[in-house]
Figure (cartoon, rainbow, N blue to C red):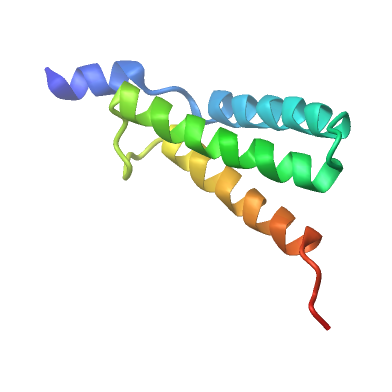
Length: 94
């Protein structure tokens, strides 16, 4: 019975990817109007979204190693994008 309840709460991968892309679109739009610059605004928004995804995954009790995409996978995607943005906006030091 527990297995069927887990299957009932899983979303199709296409829907999770669409949610990820729509959230990214909103983040980019908000970062474009940030007063601290696009890169720094986007980095801050990505970090907050990473935390939001982790909290949502814990509240929904999603499994980290689930077979389908979930909030944990989104969190990893936002963390990777955050690291990429930070690498681009940090001065090289040379």
